[in-house]
Image (cartoon, rainbow, N blue to C red; front, side, top):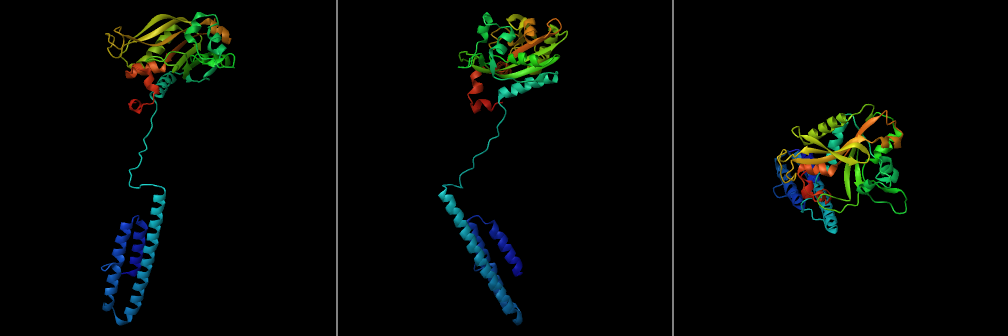
Length: 337
């Protein structure tokens, strides 16, 4: 039996020990009545006379070495134990699982919509949530005395005249057109604010995506084709689309866009109010007055614009009946997405 190999093995075993029980088992293995040191001692009488003295000294040295290593390990374990008790840490308690987070459903829908329009050649731009009154209203053909301003009413900043929280993402349309020349194709995601009473379908803050395209010879048929491709990408290839005349001050002509109900396939159900149609967004051809405000030649350029509420798209796509669920931070709801 090799003394050196026993010492190496003992040092390796002691280095791995993390409990008093394991330390006692190691002590018995090496120094017990039937341990390895005892075996080495009992083998001495079988050696040649001239080897017994040398071998006996080596065994005795190994024994003292192991006693020192065991004492040192015992001291280390006691020190760690006292630290754990001082910190009131129960190492027997189960660990706290680190749950992986995931993207919020509203962000998922924004990313999905922007990706669709990005594939169609639209760039994604963003603008500030604190806007000027001009960009939010006047530049979009909504003068102070215009009755439609009530529909886009918002929060004004105290002590800062003409500054407000934007009520739609359309002000970015003004910002972009004032700094860039056509052709332009942009989508603008972001938060918007209106002093609406909170209920199952309204919040004072929600998300909107504005889109617009400006160039020569842009027609209403271009708008129709773009929106049809978008709706089929989000809600499925089998949906149908319709346009209803509407009024928006910054587009002319203006329309509300509906799709056939994704639940009943247009037959009529409780989700669509038995109408067979679901409203998804508003759109139209950009009003010539908007072009005049930004310095575009309204006889040279034409364009279209559209806007949609992201929460509404998400509610229709996932069959959610209360907009407040998106912002209550209930993990039972959010984990479904």
